[in-house]
Length: 357
View 1 (cartoon, one colour):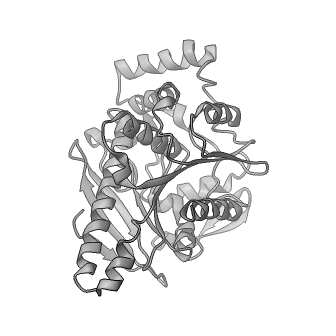
View 2: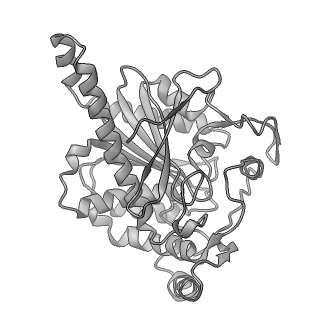
View 3: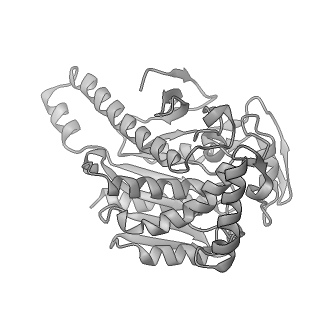
């Protein structure tokens, strides 16, 4: 990871560092970090479909009039650190890192297209690469610091490597779980990455519209149908990936005001990747590393990713350190909806508990 631009955000400490790296296909992947001194851990955030890092995890410069509408205040200063999840993670001692997935936000897209991907697992590949780069960056920064610290400080600093947690929201939930499956399938000693926990937030373990992976609707209609469309025109766009926020329509206003969010539809290739990825995740469930704790946070009233299928996936995980935290009064966007503060508090408590073990 090269030294990136440093952009001071208004009234915010710490500053937001903006950087990029090139993935295996030569695509520039934009990444961001908000680091704190004397951190007790690191958390890597992965956003969902059609959003991006800052849109998903920072506050928005809008006035929420009611559940149906949000008014824009300032489009040029749209992302606010103050009052955001990122600020709260920082306040609790966690340095925050994250990327714009390829084809989203300010990252390049495959074939120079937005909301398009060559292979859905490429998202997980980029996340794995970023985790490695964050590890490398932290190690190099520690070495620089060690040159100027006393022997006592060195011992204190090197006593324990900082734990890394990865959190994915919606499609990002699928991506982080799949990334850990891929690492579990590899011959790599993943203990070197020091991943101590994974959080799936409204994770795309299922898609309500296409049905359970065991249903006839999924097996005989959606999976072969979208595969056929992808095979005859992979870059044509489809509205099948469009979602609506029924309980809190103001979220659609928040998304529409963002200037880095692509307003068009996803490609057929990405649509097939999305439909196929839930089956891929389930088929490889035994590859998830049994020693990495996992927390699922999901609403029983989620209208986009069905709760019952998440519960089924959770039960199938061979992991003694797993938890399913069910919500009753929220929908899908647990970061932006009313009640998100309690969700954030749960995540921080969960990480703190792991740190103390």
